[in-house]
Image (tube, rainbow, N blue to C red):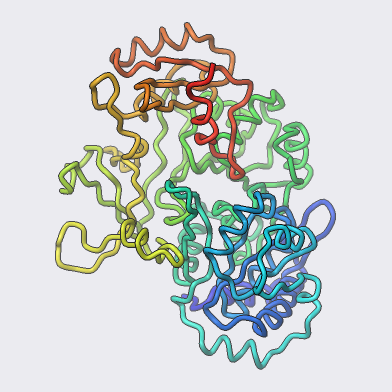
Length: 504
């Protein structure tokens, strides 16, 4: 077992120095070049930051430069924190205030974003200067001698319900175990070609960074805005012989809605991976027909947990079926708690608490929210097992697969009745022809709002729901949209939809 994630890069660079590691339509980087550039960046960062401090990465999120920047931070003994340079200056300033980095590593775009947020006092290191720095082998060796497998590796920010982002801290220990388990679970090899579409400040992108480096596989960075032009996306996947492709269900649905998928049009894709949300069967079937040689996988996880459960989706489903998210990893332990905080009976839905070698250490510089979300020995069994409480509800089916039912905080009281919004959304997904949408609750006016896209008419949706749900669970208002709004990570942007509630 490795003791530092850099060992994967160093072994692969020695074994396959001239193999292309990462490339896009304009440039490529071999494993040897990746190691050398990362060591140069690490040598420069070590001058500004002590081991175990954080380094903010302000780089074009669609640039290969992110990869040597991340590994460069590790060579300096630091944790890297990739930030979205396209966010408003006020939010970028908030993140940097929360992070308190020892240094900021930026390209030209990132430098402008940093200067625009009005912060001073943190050393700004330009990427080109750091990449050209002479490697200081003595310094890098000294850093490695101080290293621990429990050192922080990354700080990945996720939205907080209070409006204050949360910086999830993962260690080398976390990444090493997750990388090994992920490669084994999917059966990935060094011959695979990963297609990267996720921005590097998004946790999903780690699938296209660390397993490929460990395996000696190649990663192709799709052009920015590829989802805006589905025809070009499909052409790129074919032209670059991509065999592994991961997106959110919302992203996969948007391609289906583009009307470019035809039977057998992606013969070289072998792994289709869906993450972050529940995928309706109808659009998934379109993707399955387009990829005759691919297995399709669902996985459940979060920024704090990475993957918890992974599984292939079989082809025996029907329109409207709610899909499981696979079997939990053998190293993951899920407790299901009832409303009294006791362990729920097998097969009974409960709040999920997750323990695994790769759950996050906590939230960076945020002891209160860390204490609220990480609990030790919740059933008072007498040993110090640590769990992450993410607030999701679920249960294990008889076949061992995990069913995720939605958020615990999605339970509301509507028309005097206690109910789960997730039940309404599950019923919507069972309607033939359903594409994409969600249900939101206007607490002030005690109204349920249904936002949706696709060709279904409001009267068709109402009629279908009346056959599946109690009267008090039926939405009060329906809003058809040409497109659902999405966050930068291509999840449904429920906050922007909430802002529309109450408007004509």
